[in-house]
Structures are given as structure tokens and as C-alpha cells.
Image 1 (cartoon, rainbow, N blue to C red):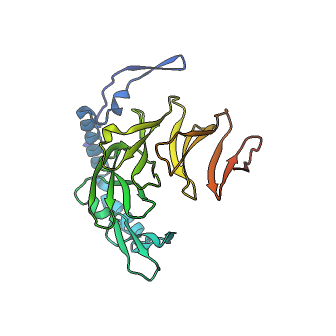
Image 2 (cartoon, rainbow, N blue to C red):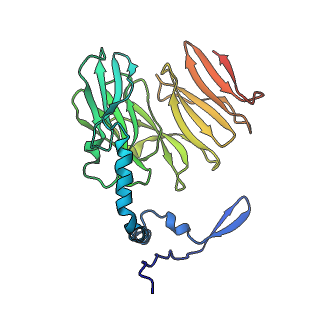
Image 3 (tube, helix red, strand yellow):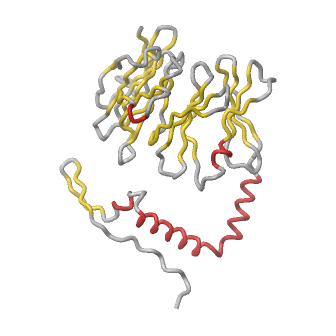
Length: 299
């Protein structure tokens, strides 16, 4: 009789799914329920089984890990990015697993200021991932988001960089896209649905309850996701609605966060275009009638 451990068997729970008029049965759809105790117990059992099956390779695993780590420069620093009077950069230290986010004022020879140490945030968690890291236009506030469950649903918080204090604001279940308006008081962020599709944009005013945040954009088409970026000159906040082959862009004056979105051009199947702005002109990169893309300008 073999001494090998018995693999766990996931229960079969048929669920019918209908899309585009076609129905299929997924026997394991229930495994998507990340908060279901039965799912968690099954995943724990899979983890124990894997550890038991791989136990005889543990010395080799350790050897390979040490060899790979030995080839990494653990104490390192990224190239600085200048924003206003500050130089922003990240650094890592030997023996630590996460980045330290810093800046210097006025000169690269100035002393470094630690804005956020991911290692401190991760100290009391079994899992940690930083989502977004966005400094406000006046460079006095830092918006960042964290995930401590592995579920890719991030909690968005704000830190006062002058005092080091955390603001009371905490927005749960955000995704990977956050932008500041130019008033330094308004944040835009995206949320995902139950399938982890990014489909809504909300507006949050500092000091207000997250439950009162206004919905700015909702994308009902399941083939499309929504993301944001700020133009290079920080004049506009752009919402990109995108699928595998098609996209459209909406933009908002970053100085008027309560204003209305403007659609640049409606989506057209197979056409992708991307928007930026500088010195009073919009720059548009598009593949319409140009398989290798073309650049267009408009005021």
C-alpha cells in the first residue's frame, strides 16, 4: 500500500451558466466563493497535500531559493522621478520583502523622506499587497490602497505627508485605478463586480463617508472594463472603457471634479484610441484606418 497522502477531492455542485443564448454547466463554480468556509477548508487541504507531496524536495527548494536570492541585489534603489520640487523613488533593503517609498526635496543630495514603508504595513499580516500609490497635486497627501486577503479588493486610505497622520477616510473594495482631482480634496476610483470586472468609477470627497460616494460612470457591457489615468499635464482625468479590440475615452477637467464627463468619440468595433493632453492640445493615438496606429491632434 502506498504511503502517499490522499489528495482532497472538490465537491461537485452543478451550476448552470447562460451567456449569449448558450447554457453550460460548471461543476466547480462554487469555488469562486472566496469567503465560503467550505472553499477555504478545501484550499487549506490542497495546501497541506502539496506540502506533503513535495516534502522530499524541501532541501532542493531551499537550495534553489538561496541561489536565486543570491543573484538579486536586495539593497537597491529605483531611478528618481521628478515632480515639482520633489524627487520620488523606491528602495529595498536586504532581508525585507517589500518596498520603501521615499522622496527628496530640491536636490538628489537632500536627505530622503520615507513616505510609506510597506514592510511596516505587512508586519502583522499573512498576506500584503500595495495597490495604488498616488501623491496629491500639492504633494501634501498620499492616497494608497492595500489588500491583506489576496482577493484583489483594496482598501483606499489617505495619509497626511506633513504630519504622518492617517485621515479618517477609508474606502473599501476598490481596484487598481485611483486619481486625484486638482483640488487635492477629491479622489476618483474604480470598483469591480462579482466577476472582478472593473465596471464603475466613483468620486470621493475627503472627510465624507465612502457610502455616500457618487457614481461617476457605469459600464454595463460585460466585455468592457474601465480604468483611469491623468493626462501628462494633469489637466484632465481620462476614463478608458476597453475590451480586447475596442475602446472609448471619456474625459473630465481635473479642476472641476463635480463637472460632467465628455465623450471623445463613441466606441466602434475594432477601433482603439488613447488620449493625452499637453499645452492646450489633445494627443490621440488611434488604430482607425491605421493598423500600426497613428497620432492625431485636436484642441
